[in-house]
Structure formats: C-alpha cells, structure tokens
Image (cartoon, rainbow, N blue to C red; front, side, top):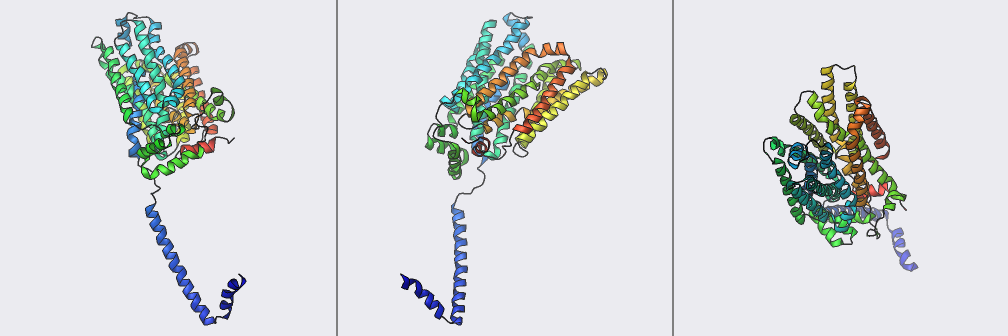
Length: 500
C-alpha cells in the first residue's frame, strides 16, 4: 500500500521544471475541456428534464367553470323570489301576509344552513364531484316543487329543498376550485365564484322582468333554474375528482392521473411531492368537531369563522335589502336600482379577479373593508340633519353603490377563496362547513333584525355600527390574515400550522 501511494509522489519530485510546466498546461487544458463537457451535459440534461415553469391554465379552466355553475345557481335562487314575490303571494292566497312572505325567503336560508352544516362531511365522504351532484339534486327537486306549488306549504317545502342545495354548493365549490387550480391562478379562479354568483343574481332579475305582465310567469322563473342544475350534475361526470381528496383516500395513482389532466404530465411529479410533504398516514382518520375548536387547528378555524362573521356583520345584506327603498326615495325605479347594484357588484368582482393574484388576498381585504367603512360614513352623513334633501339622496345612492363596489373588491370574494387555502388538507372540508354555517346563521339574523333595528335605532346609529364593524375587520385582517398569493397549499399549511 505504501509503495503505491509514494510512487507517484517520487515521480513528481523527480520531474524537471519544464516537464512540470508542460504537465500543468496539459492538466489545465484537460480541466477546461472537462468544464465544457460538464456544461454541455448540463444543457443536455436541462433540455431533457421537464420545464419547471407554470402549468397551462387552460387545462384546469373547464373543470373550474363547471364547478362555478353551483355558484350561479346560488345567486339565482337568492334573487329568484325578489320580483315575483307579489305574484306568488297573490296566486297562492297569502297576499298581504308579511309573515308568509318572509317565510318564503327565510325558509331557503334555513335550508342553506342545514346544507352548509353537513357539506364538509358529504364532501369528504363521497368526494367533491358527487357532492356537486348531490347539491344539484335538491335544487332540481325543490325548483320543480316550487314551480308546481298550489299552496304556501308546497312552496315552503320546495324552498327548503332548494336551500339545502344552496348551502351545500358554495363550500364545495370553494374546496374544489382551490384544490384543482394551479397556485399562480388560484386567486383568479376563486374570483369566478363571486362573478358567477353575481351573474346568477342578475339572471334572476332578468328572467323575472315579465312577471307583472304575464300571469303565472313566476312558475317559469323556477322551471328555468332546473336547466343549469341539470347541466352541473351531468357535466361533473366529465370533470376530474380533486387529487387532494383522492390522495387522502389512498388512491395515489388516480391522484396522479387527475394532476396530469389538470396540470400536464411534466408537473405531476412536483405536485405529488408537494402533496406528500404534509399529508401523513393519518389523513383518512375521522375529524371530530373538537379538533376544529381546540388545539393546533383552533387558530385557523377561528380566523375563518371570524372573517365570515365580519363579512355579514358589515351590513352588506342589509344594504341589499334596503337599497330599493333608498333608490325609490331618490326617484329611481326598482328595476333600474337593481341594475345599478348588479353592475356595481359585478364590476368590483371583475376588478378583484384581475388583482387577486397580483396584489394578493390580504391587500384586497384590507382596502375593501376600509372602503366599506368610508361608504358607511357617507351614509351617516346622508342621514344627518345637516344634509339638504337632494344632497342627502345623492349621498345615499352614492354611498350605497360605493359600499357594494368595495365589498365586491375583497370582502365578498376573498373569504371563500382564502379559507380553503389556509385550512390544512385534513380538516379543510369540515372547517369550511363550520365557517359557512356561521355565515348563514348571521345572515339569517341580520335579515331578520335589520328593519327593526333601523326603526328603533335610526339610520345614523345603525350605519355607524356597520362602519365600526368594517374598521374592526381592517384591524383583524391586519393582525391575523396571512398572504397566500402564489403559494402552494402545502407551503401555506407548513407556514401556518404549528407542528406537533
């Protein structure tokens, strides 16, 4: 051993300086040639390795568009009884009965609460695709029952069925869109949900226009809703299942196939590696309610529930309920007033879609709630005794449109997108169900108590309260909400969730 190690050293020592220089030159040339070969090899390998750029958004877009049909139906059924309610009450024999008219609206909200409450367990139990189909089924049945109703009871049962589908649809849509979208367009795709809801509301208003001229047209309004519901149920057959859900079920090969359809073959391996980073062996374990309210999951569930609570307590639904009265006092017909509100809503949603993946979710939330607070301040000034009649009306109308516009910029679309992003995969569906249930409960009570509060407190104090809630939301978002723009769901989960 020693001989073999010393021999080269002895030969090196005996070499002349000229020989040493020649040897050095040859070694340098060989070193440069080696570098060139390594560079060429690296370039060759780089050309063979799949490009690590963003996947094509065109692959996932059709699946997202089908999912947003549920949001369109949600918006449609929210607005479908607004115009025809007077005709419905006259034909079914409860005209002038304000309690019965209120039940036609609120029964749907009660059904939505039930649907949202169980949405997480349904989405985790049967998968996202079948959950969409189960969402469409009660909407079809309920719409048919409402369209053929001969009594108030028949109408209420139909509205209860429709409400169940309405409650199931939005949380499943948020889950599905979040889980199938590439991270670089996830915010844009999430905004489609809000835009589809706005289009549904406007569609209901347009379909309801002939209701005063054509007897029984309100039945057509309900029949029309069965068409997009049937399309949703059938189109979901051709959509991919969420790869996150498939992976949780241990169906790894199917998850890879879903990723290939959504992202392209060159991105499957990266997506699966990221999915495996946080998905442990306990992914299929049942999630109990206590896990959502205690321990390491409490913080994200608290943030989600509070965001939805602040969204509803900001007064957005109260503004929608009261808008026709404000516009009517300004001499604007109800149809035109609804058009103004719809245009403001969809304009804000389109702007939010363009900015969601550029400025981020948190920035949009902050400025949205701040703008809503300023709009409420305008409403307070309009309601004060210092404003003259005409100035007060202009301020009321302007403040209301400003409120709806700024709501649609962030407070409307962001929570439904942000929450599935910040919830860990293991609790995502059930945590969304809890948060959406909070949304519906507060929505119900705001709608129930708004007119009484307005009568007892007056517009100045009530709008001041709404403005205060909006400023509280600004503080809450600033302190608690994290930015998720451009991050994979796994990166967000690792950053947010404290490790055990």
